[in-house]
Amino acid sequence: MNARDPEEIPTTWIRVYETLLTLIGEEVRRPGLELTPHRAARAFQYLTRGYSETLDGVVHGALFPSSSEEMVVVKNIELYSLCEHHLLPFFGKCHVAYLPHGQILGLSKFARIVEIYARRLQIQEELTRQIAESVLSVTGALGVGVIIEAQHLCMMMRGVEKQQSATVTSVMLGEFRTNASSRMELMNMIRPPDRV
Image 1 (cartoon, rainbow, N blue to C red):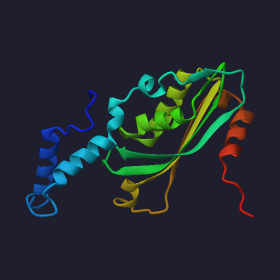
Image 2: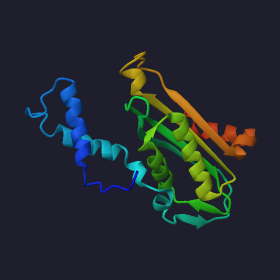
Image 3: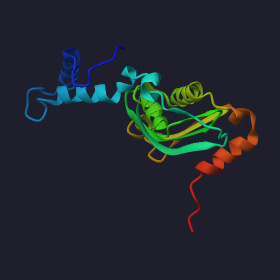
Image 4: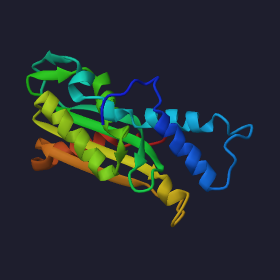
């Protein structure tokens, strides 16, 4: 898919939503629905904007020399994505950890990397892997760990209709895969604090 102008909504997209509304028995010219095809097309374009973003464009040189090799964890990055099976949302939080090796990445870039891949049609398992591999390729880190916990509307609104279910996925690369103590330290860092 090519980069898209966020203000430009393809006419074919609008027609798709008009057709969809007609197929379910709605009158697309009635008040209240008149602008819905345009709004829905604009929303779908926004929700899938990750296809027009690149890793280089998002990182934009925000790598800085550093002698630190201690773990860095960016916790609770909110994410919203669309399940590629039903086009229904899933949402949750992502934790990204890395062990720097000669350079560090600007902290906001972790959230931007999550967004690139979350704003595409996804499955959570693949999303977790894409984020981890991208952070590793950008930073050259000794290790990268990514954990996502999300709720899926395809399980909540339809099918089994389980409201309290959550899916947790993780990808551990480098030191996080081979070193159990690094993995344990990461898990301790992302664990919610005990309530007193």
